[in-house]
View 1 (spheres, rainbow, N blue to C red):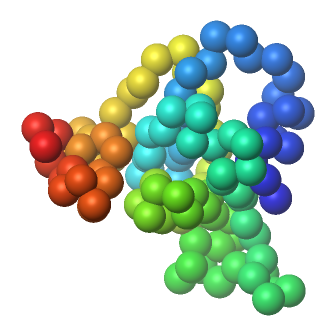
View 2: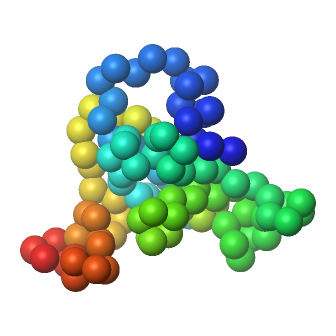
Length: 110
């Protein structure tokens, strides 16, 4: 299901600019809200008509394909909307916030 449906249900959030997705494991991924809206991200819980297997992120997974699936959180437990950017797991460990492989964005200084 498109993440737009979930965000719509949350109601108007005019100050939100970013989101942090949380996994049951404690893993986090930060994203600008524009990367989650407009049909660009989904919460999935099944594939080929079957429940999503745990090794693929089940029971639910955030899928963000246009960001090379790097920000696609397995075992997603929630998404918090923020009025600022907050580093996720990889950014806290020195990696680039966007990580575009075509622009060789690997580390925070790239």
